[in-house]
Length: 175
Image (cartoon, rainbow, N blue to C red; front, side, top):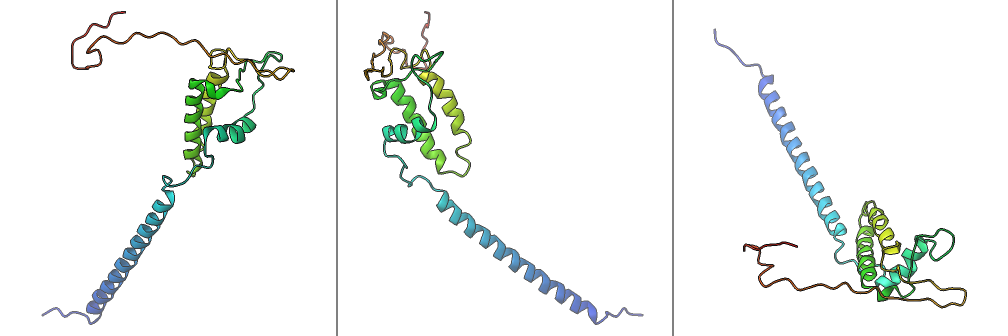
């Protein structure tokens, strides 16, 4: 006896093929939609062409940092914070504050960018305002409105011996 195929078998295969083609079309559209969304977000996430909110470190410091994170400075009680109204005369302070400003400007543009920024601030403020910081020799304005600014003395440094910075050579680093 010969086996005969039921008339539904070809239809089942054809309907499965139609369903499979439809599923491939659906998935292809979903991938295209996701690629489009990713491309749009990629353009929106590109923060390199965003202008800074504050045009200088001085503007950022006076309009954001000092009002937002005030610290008790001066000789009141047990104050341990030092500040210099002429902060811009302290190269170390300018460098640290500029780094904080750049980091803040970059962080504000990212959805979760501000999460690590306060840790940077928490690290820098005790150094800036601390007993060993760049403002340690300066006094804030007194009742007479006169602030004292004293630059920290420079630390001497000798130039390195010739070829010291050539990393492949044998040198003796003995202090």
